[in-house]
Image (cartoon, rainbow, N blue to C red; front, side, top):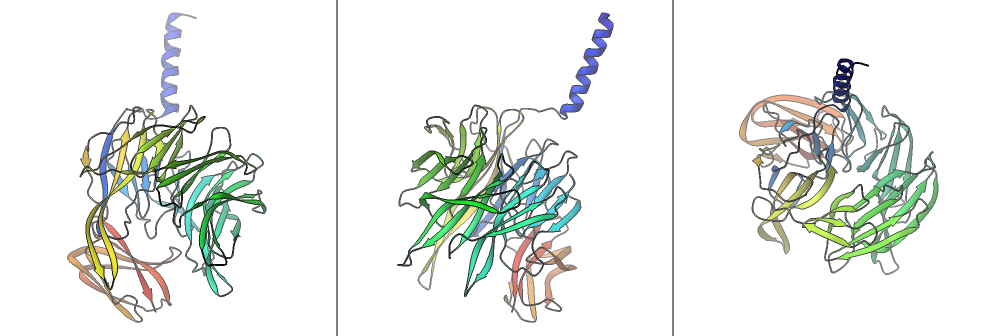
Length: 478
């Protein structure tokens, strides 16, 4: 073979490699304020989920979803935010650069890279007003998905939360569902992973109530076969607190790690590794450290854990904490790390939040502490060091403090008032399952909403202005 032919083949191989690999992977770092939620008890703009897509961008989400480019610039904000999204991970994407999303009410959506809906499926019965919540979605070896969360059922005379799991095929059609209750009290599903025999390990929080009406919460581990039939159930010994962060992770060796906050007067984090039989392999408590949601395993087996005040590295073999690195917000406050994903340049993309104390209000003996909440998107290089704020994104839904609905609840009519006049806006009403009831175009500062054909129950009002800013509020019809 001549040198000329060798040179030609080398260039051809390089070109084919670039085509196969796709876009280049520049090493970038940034830290941006993405959302700001002023003076509220309940911060809706928390970044609970991040994923890196195959078209070299990032997705973030909780109450709404956004697509971010490699430099942290907003490509689009999600119009699917009629209710919050399943929290980890979000979204899954297919080889053709399209994305799978699951809303918190078990509405399964397939969208393209420009946010156009390709299909959507409802994974609950249309008459189920059962407070459904999705906590986790993972893709299975058959190309389908296992979706884990909870829903409310009437248990004799009480409404109780139950673990609810849905298995779908690759096009979102339901193959089977499973409702699980392991005690007379509340149960909520948090995570599921496929096992080597084609079944599933499921992590759930289980509430126990003793004869003295004392409540205790623990992490339960269930094993289901590939048809959703329960094979065994085990409860971990350590207690957690109500509403604790619980995350699961499939390890490199095929086992399962769960991380949770412990019920204690001291802040503590519970880290346990189990095998596919539910046997405990490692069991560690980190005192004075509060788990905040992020968990990732590195190629060498060590773990990165998102804490309330830092990113922490843990040794796989000794469970020792090797180091902690803090990230500071615009006002010097610590940023909690809620989600961690690796990037192609051996860095990390982190989703985090901070809260700045604002004021305290005492009303009828009730003490309410008010905070300003800030959501940050952080891209680090391979050193994982903190960096300075490199830009400010305008809040993605700045209608949050400009809307009032009264009366609410209502029986026949309610009024929606805006502080600033809107032009060419749209008001969309959806039910608890995300089904659109009506869409109303309008301009002005006031719109009167009639009950019309809507039945008693809970609905969501989404307002979208002409700049695609949006906000969702809950309304109740009596």
